[in-house]
Image (tube, rainbow, N blue to C red; front, side, top):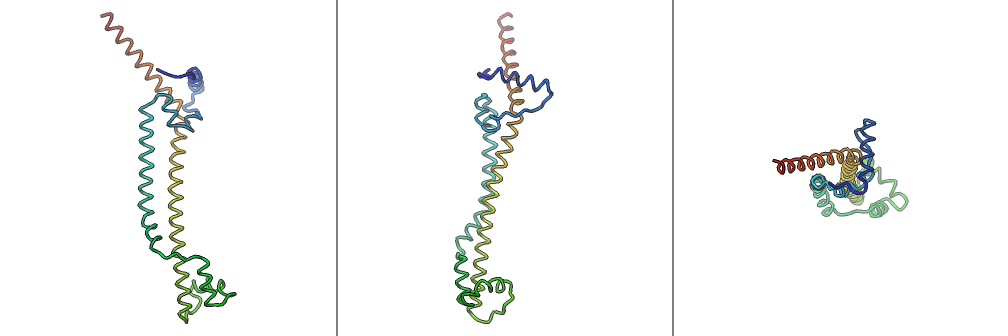
Length: 193
């Protein structure tokens, strides 16, 4: 059994937790460096399970993101990009240099009667611009959601190990000590009998 140079501090912390009846205490290293903390404490099986869970959850979140994002990206690639300046230029061509922006919302909301091909073209340009912007916004939302889910999952697992890591390590050490004592007793009985 290896508890490292900090063995005494762990025993002190465990006694304090037991004396105060605490179920958890914050271990900053277990919180910040969960996987490495598990390896340093020689909890190999737990480290592998933790790594497996993290990789699986991150993979599943990634699959869901890709399934949602691919259609949006494909549509973005096939949709003609219309910029704000192109919309303004089209409206200024139709309604005059000073009136272009004033007519944008009126044209978009159907407040104007479309009487010329130029006005119909201006409305089409506005619709293309709005559609492209909506696709960009949808893709940005999906990327943000992906990052937020990853960060939230990581923080939750870090918090769980940060708060309950000492208690879990205490149980791990007790099991190791019990196994070592049992092994020693079994060997002693074999020698004596």
